[in-house]
Amino acid sequence: MTQTAPDQRPNLWRRIPLWQKILVGLVLGVITGSVMGENASIFKPLGDIFINAIKMLIVPLVFSTLVVGITAMRDPQKMGRIGARTIALYLLTTAFAISIGLLASWLFQPGVGLDMTFEPNPDAGQEAPSLVEILVGLVPQNPIDALATGNILQIIVFAIGLGISLTLIGEKGEPVVRVFESFAEAMVKLTSLVMAIAPFGVFGLIAHVAGSYGPEVLLPLVKVIGVAYLASILHVVVVYSGFLALLGRLNPVRYLQGILDALVVAYSSASSSGTLPVSLRCATRNLGVSEGVAGFVLPVGATINMDGTAIYQGVVAVFIAQLIGVDLSLADYGMIIVTGTLASIGTAGVPGAGLVMLSIVMAQIGLPLEALAVVAGIDRILDMARTSVNVAGDLMVTTLVGKSEGELDEKIYNSTHKS
Image 1 (spheres, rainbow, N blue to C red):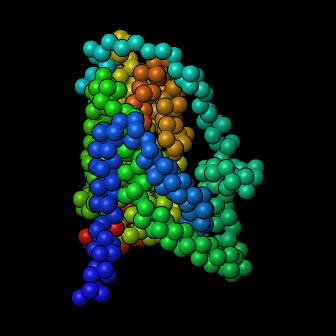
Image 2: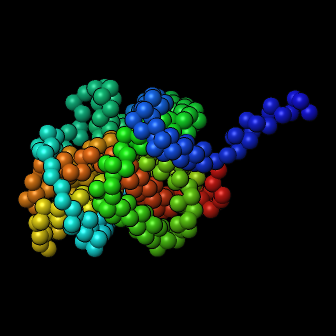
Image 3: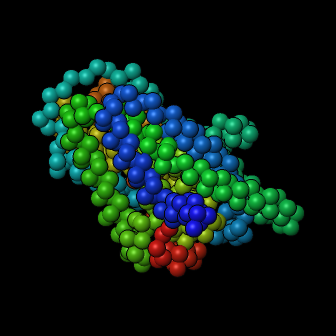
């Protein structure tokens, strides 16, 4: 009897789904931050360690899984087909996202009735890269430098090129492919080890955020936060679930259950690139997507699919226009949709990048960039919501592409998910 009791405790801990552990950490973090205020920042190192561990995984995991995903296809036509479907779905959902953001702001008018003044934002004038610069910058001059600096777009291009080359040289490339397969497996295992500390990392992150952004900061802008969160929830529940039900003939409830781990990490870290290791884990273990499809679609999505950012741009642009008394025309709304869709593609998957990209949308419709300072104080709160939408979109598209290619194990998808 005395020997079995110690063994039962860790087994019980392992049986608790990861998302429940993380959720407990999140709730305790909110309570701790609310009670301790800025003193809760003493727990921030826990979050920093977790985020650093996640960042440690990004480059090797993206590179190895992409190479393995490309070589596993063996068929250039299949590769092109998957790529075309992936990009088309990402662009389509982004257009839906920004439209929902605009509609929500138009209906609820979060900027009407607020009497606020603001100082010019020193970062507001920062220029975002043009479309031409983004396209030219896709090809790395030095792939080693791209890997060292974590330039995900360039890493993706190099990994795709290397994967295609290994496929084309046939048997001569097999030894290298096996090395990458082993390396990718090791990175997946390392991801599982890092995720074991996720509940503690999330606790530290949320305690710091809750302590720093208290009610005195949130109350004047609680309406725009509510509109952004409502639009985000609607996009996930209506658009993503609708796509899965109509196009994939899949139960959207299982999808929502299967992505919980990734959503909680995305919400607490506010980094879609940083959540990528967890997204890969959810796609393969919970949703039943093959490693080849997940390893290709998810890294691309973490770079170009920014539905949450598009919602944010639509909500905040209309909010600022209402705040300063500018009436937007139908042409302005159309410009927001087009510019916001394109700008979201170039948004880096790191915390705070959406604020810079928002300046593109504002400039196109003639809003003063200094007004960005209004939302700068609550950008982190908005960033957590938009990152969650980004990650949910990545996983939805990955699931649909997997289903269309016959690389979705529906037994796994329809089973009870145990993280």
